[in-house]
Image (cartoon, rainbow, N blue to C red; front, side, top):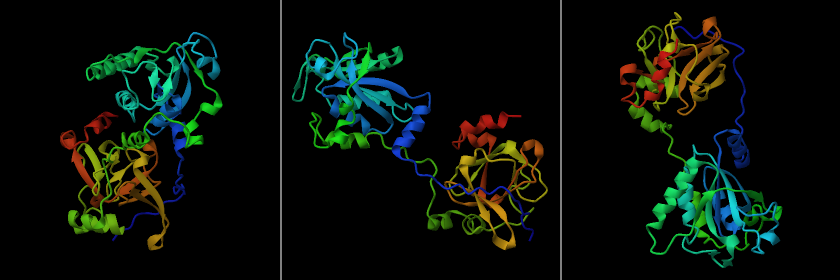
Length: 352
């Protein structure tokens, strides 16, 4: 049986790095898509802590909003002469959490019919409100409050106005309940747990299956190649000479891996591609088996053996040759991609 030719200089020992939540949030906040909304819900200590529990909230800051002076101190705010409300600036990633969900969760922490009073707190600085900085958010906020009002016989007094100003509160107020776990809070503790679970991670679309399941699902050849690092015979496999337009997916998970636009005839007898759809879908590992030094290619989600990558590919396509076993792949023709859930990848077939 022919063997894959040796390649060199490709293997990179990329150690996985576990990012802290803070680091992840910093990266998200570098994204221009991060948005801001401002919630006044009584004492801002509890309101901030509540929003910090929600997946998709990437930053919070307590402060004073919509007053009539500049740079107020806490003492000035509680004097009832400045018009400020204790408010939490919430930064969130709209790709992870919807504004409507944030508003709905906020409603659970307040009595929306109570004017200038939440829990044991009294005064205009404890009024409720949702303050926005653009008309789009303003429309969402007002509509959600109108819907809420239909559930009450008494007037709902949650302010829904544009943000006029916001000044950061003193440092000792920031993250107060993190620093003082036993500190005062008007929000019932069970609501914090509810907030943690209110926006769970969506279930992964593609998941690795148990080997017992795979043994029943796959053919003997597919199992040998993907799970036992096998190699099928050249020129005697399903896709080595496949020329139709379409997408090649991991036979074990269904996750997209390669597109026909990147397939080329290499003469090696196995499907050859100049690159995967994205490098994020694969792992490349040093392979010293059979007395050779090669770079193995595995699917990242399914951890299935796919083949090897070499440096003898077409120079005009980047110089790489991903030499992949047909038994590791399932081909979906272009005409079936939409129906089988791969419609978002059809545009890749139109590139030159």
